[in-house]
Amino acid sequence: MSDYEVTELVNAFYELRNGPDLFNDLAQFHGQFFNYDNTADPTRLDLHFNLPDEPEREIFLAWHRRQMFEMEQAVQEINPDISLAFWDSSVYQSPTDALWDEELLGSFNVNWSLGRNLGGNGPLPTPLDVSNLMAMDNFFQFSNELERRPVHRGAHVWTGGAMPTTLSPRDPVFYFHHSFVDKVWVDWEAIHGTSAFIATSMLRYDGTYVFDGETLPLVDPNDITDSRVYGVFYAEDGLAELDNYIVSNTYNPEEIFYYQFNIQAGNNFIVPDGTVASFKSLNEINLVPGFEAVPGSSFEAVIDTENAGLMNKAFSKGAVARSNNPYPYSELINEAVVWEEGGDLLDDKPIVLTAAPNPFTEKITIKLNKRKDCVIEVFNMMGMLIREEAFQNTDTMVIKNLYGLSSGFYVIRVTDANGEILVVKRIIKM
Image 1: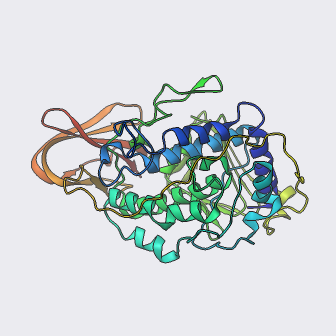
Image 2: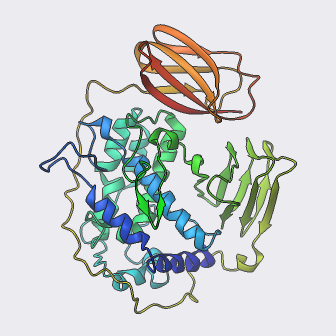
Image 3: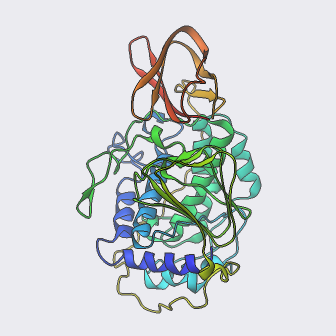
């Protein structure tokens, strides 16, 4: 992060405590619905530890992706140039890393009564832990191992204080950590492309929950298996690659992609007629083949020269010092979570769909992990049915002659002979 981003993000976090207090609301919700497996009513929906035994309840990765998006939307209402950053805890493992400096996340420990104990309970994950996850080819196995083992649980117990409790979202590092967990999912999905949930709605995001006078929308976890749905692209190694995305202004009247790093946009990155978008970098912007700003759109690419001189520092020495804060948490931290590990998947695995290639051009091959009589339906993003084909007793189906479709996102839905939806998958036409 640049000095500018650090200062603005920290300021935004403090501002969010002044008013409806999104930090406290997310923490209380997370604590209330953390895990019901060991309670008197194990049928209640919850957020954690549903695999391997209850895949129909599993929403861990999708729920936290939406939670990160809710927080990011809130900070962008304060400053549209800032985004959540990710803490790669497999690399940055020292209590003296810049992440914990007073100008970044350090001041929150005292001001918000978090009680951190950095490094007191470890371990953090290793790069091998991350690469082992990438080798898993079953989505639920991947999700289960990610949640229960050090790539996810490590940062919670290593940080201490609020983080190893059900109220972990009180600590701002929670959002840095879960952005990293989300990036691990992005990297896995880019390799395997088989993320699929049985659940079709999620707690908090079920169309009934109200925060600050606004009813939060209904979110199907299968609709957000691609982080690009929310315009999220993770940058690393000095490069932000933006591709296979169509600007819609669904969530922001202007979509701003602000990075300290180089920005490279192309390969079906489209700014359609009537939409507004901008790229902002502290370094360099490259528009490569496949990028298109359609006539009638509003697009600009800007080098932030005002803050470019601050880009190589880990944090801003000029950030506002905060020795006191009027919004500490007064409630006691909940008891520590027993971070369960391990477990095998059920033999009766849910239907998983693989669509390749994705993105596709002229045809797409669909494979299921079970032989079924089924119907394949292809919908555009307006919800219009554009192709329907039936197949009998097979796990491999090929849909041809798709070259006439326009570039963009499409949805594949698989139903059985009784019309029951088995699985839904989002795909991209180049």
